[in-house]
Length: 157
Image (cartoon, rainbow, N blue to C red; front, side, top):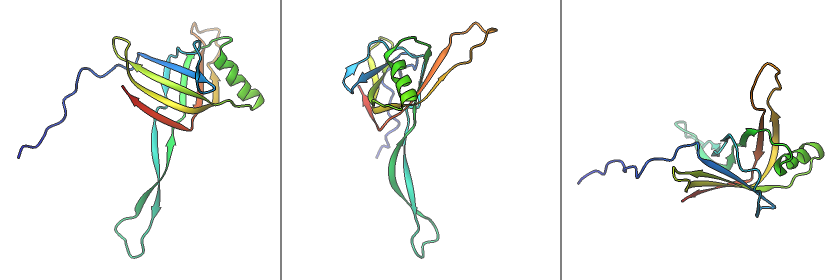
């Protein structure tokens, strides 16, 4: 009987620098302004477990799945003045009023066709940071936005 080898890679894996971010106001209406970001991180999820010890069992402890946990989504971009997303972050941080939205992150292949997507549901701001203002530096001011979300759906195209 022949043992199958590893599966061949079909085509080339997509590169990480072609991507788009779409915010859906109210969960459905796309925001056409806040789509360009320099960096996206935090696309990760894990299962937390609970340890259960059995009486008389000294060789191991049972690990039972408890819940799904998501990392916070972190977005970086050059400072944009007057964007709807900046206004939403300002309202959340100043007035403590939150309007969760859905966020779609799409990885594009070399021909700009979607290769994979991640849909983050009920995302809301949890952290906002602006890079240092430095008279000795000639750099773009970077805005870093961090969002928590309820659920992530991975979409493979």
